[in-house]
Image (cartoon, rainbow, N blue to C red; front, side):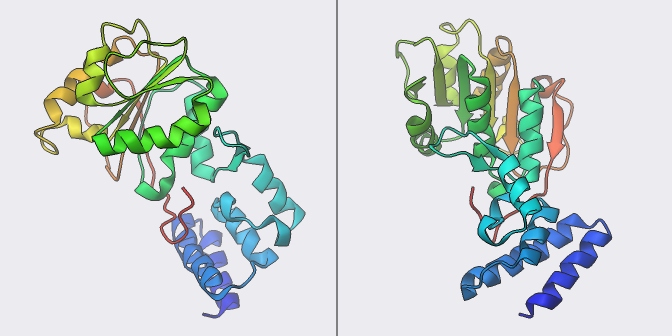
Length: 257
């Protein structure tokens, strides 16, 4: 691969406001750098900044303007060190912090978990309910959140656990229903793969997910629903009043999320 020619192609896409094509071309270029053990030049770092892939900027070889962006977009996600978000993650987090109800469609490599973790770190909600499709995802989410938030929150993944002042509930939809009579208020309700509330996508999960959605929404201050790659949000009771944010942002080659 000719790095100079690739940079020219990326710059041409950017000059035409075709950010998606520029980003896709850049991801391939970054992959080539990683495979070949080549340091990012200041030009490559600048193209990373222009396409919004801020986490991939290499501060040690970047110009000060690009290093500034890399640092400005750092947020606390519950780790020892802050993490740099990419542009779309940052815009999504801003909407959540401002209190919007959001249904977001984004590729699996988007890094939606960083947005959730940053929201919890910044807003410090009292009760967080995360509804996931499977037991396996329940355990995966618990393992991600426990090291970050267990000192401040009780992380609850099973039924009939005594609540604390601040709680993060992680359940498949069937277990979430069991806590309805114990919760007076939920600060944020997070539903992973919310599109499966439609029987067109998941006949087995749909009835219990709809019940959990409808009942939990009654006591929820804010909603954040996630799905991969859906193009529209149809009118229905459980997404009423939500902002739909479709994103095509993808970091498949170099996925840090």
